[in-house]
Image (cartoon, rainbow, N blue to C red; front, side, top):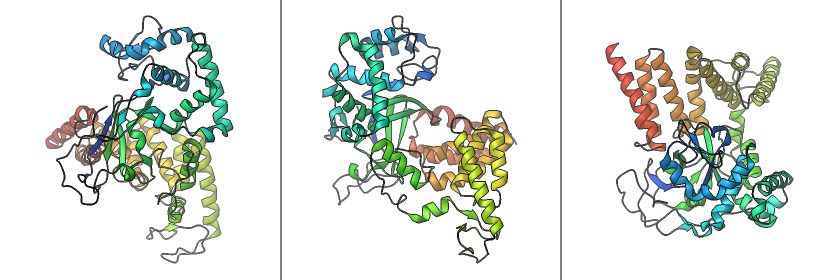
Length: 456
């Protein structure tokens, strides 16, 4: 664990809290994981230690985990030597990710991990036992109890002969700390590739309008400020635990189900937010108001709302929500296109369900190599991402980067430069200028785009 570091020059002291002011883009925390597990679907293509995509070789004993080189294998051996015989016993079965993570936590705690501290300031730190377990809530949550019982059966089968599996009360407290404090480690494209527990960063609370963001480089977590702050006060630093591209009702449900609290942030308590998310397009094409379909007229321009428009709105919303639900795992381009055609002139361009459909269509078009369609949908998606994720979110930066990359492929260097510059502006704040995403990918795309623009 490293002490908090700044990526910008020292700032003047704040009279309010006695510490340096924090500027947007400042890295306020860097932390290595207390424990982490590569997701099983990547076990034959990513290194179990550094998580990099590589030609990997299996551990000669358990044949379960794989490493990209001997250095990574040696680095991982301190913990892997304890789990190795259990994973060997599990083969040829694939151990559920949550069970392997619990196994690692049990072994980590048994071999001195209960004394390890994760520091979030020079003197402020947390140990694993300091994390909230939500024991009472989990005990009364049938779904969690059923999940825990299935994990207990897997662990007993793997580890039972060594009598290492804790009793059910202790296991529940470890499980509770895992599910309510676990992080998904994300790769450069924001895909979840591993699960981890970080101790220091557990000090941060949630907000649907965060002032900080968590990004990763390998297994290392970085917290960057995305707003200026008068000082480094961890009680006033918020990250988002969930996907923000959802209604307040859905966000609150997700937080209640997974983290056992009711969100009362300004976005969740703002009735205007829900109205806009479900807004219809005003029949007056010169009016950009979010139309409340239950009203008789547009409150901004006075245009009437006809029964035909109400019926079309209900039909399109029902179709869209049903299609998005069916496409949770895989987006289908044709289904997205049908929904978008029906949404035109009915749903407001910033209606949440329209934005979600554009997002699905954009990714599906990329997957199919339909670059013209991808550009169209991606450009239409930008305002929605900016509204719902905020102007300093990594996903908005990556959207600009993808657009720039496609425009380079389509020989549109001038447009590519604009989008890549926007990507750089945002990702420099959320990832830091030295992050590999900027140094190894974005920098080269920018050089290529500028070179092609000069030659065109």
